[in-house]
Length: 486
Image (tube, rainbow, N blue to C red):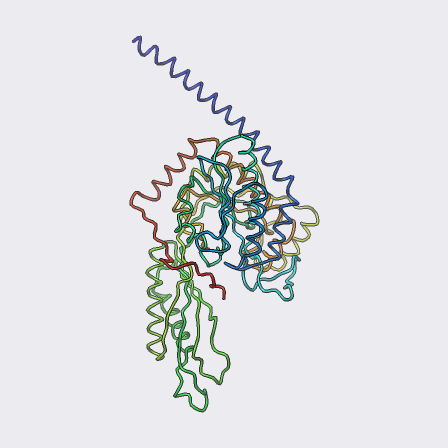
């Protein structure tokens, strides 16, 4: 009885100490977060300038020489140790500051999309002499991530907390699977958690899964001949491509309904009166489950081989990219959602409202109200997989990972559109970028200062991934496809 009477006061004392410590930690974090918000906001113009430079460069995957160099220089000038050319990718880098645990990673993308050159105006106006444009807002992505890293570096330098911050410069997200090679090279092995974001038309924590994806180029070789004088001597490589496409299109009836298959003919001959001796078709195969993607892709390969046999041509293929589906982390999502609500959405000026409404007239569907950009969407989880694919997914199967999207585009704007490119070159895009930088910084502060939170996220990650999981990249052992945009 006496033992119990002693234990009870001790438990009360211990609980009180833990509560007091949590309150102190919360109070300290509140001050750090206020400082981070103010610091990042004060550098709005400087970070906007960097983002617009990259918007102007508009370099496609693995060709982002100037974009990568600018972000590397910005980090180096702010005290980071930068290792360039990692994972056999000239434009990939890892910038590090600090020492010891925890190690928090920030992902930074910076590649543009071909065929989307567009001025920063609310009507379609391609930029003369240019081809590519930032239709997915990666110029904002990379810049905000660098801004986050610099703010965390300053807090470590000021001895507000200890640990290591790593900013990962990740090229060629758009179909090049840059992060896959970085994961394969072991660059995330010592990282405790990874934070990322993505430009969008709304403010939300990214708790949707994504589609696993294998992309490949199928190249057919035939025999040239005069298409009118001696067609019997020719064997059309284009016939091989078209036969393959027809078979794949018929196959759509007999594959899981969640599968997505898209292709473009990248080379089909030069003149109608010459039987093409070379033709190429570029395929994407997607599904919410990577094993289904593997199976369907093998059937696409069979269609290619059958097409070659039937047209008496030859075919070979090259896998240019392959990514997993996203592995979500609820613990990290809850933390990031709270921080996103603390930061809030994007408020438009009267001039920006005018821009937004004019741009919305270019859409052929019902659009959300302009003021939706100022709101934060509810936190929901979609385990079935959203419409896109991302190489962030491979990172998420390697280390606990969480991200957000912010309203860098006018509400209703789809990614990979001229409208997204236009928004990305304005203050609308820059404001959303700053929201992302602040939210990532606040989330990282929680992870640096709350070991129990980080451990909880790791426990969920380990359970979700499973004890028997072994990472096998969908790109196999090939080297990075540095010329996949050629």
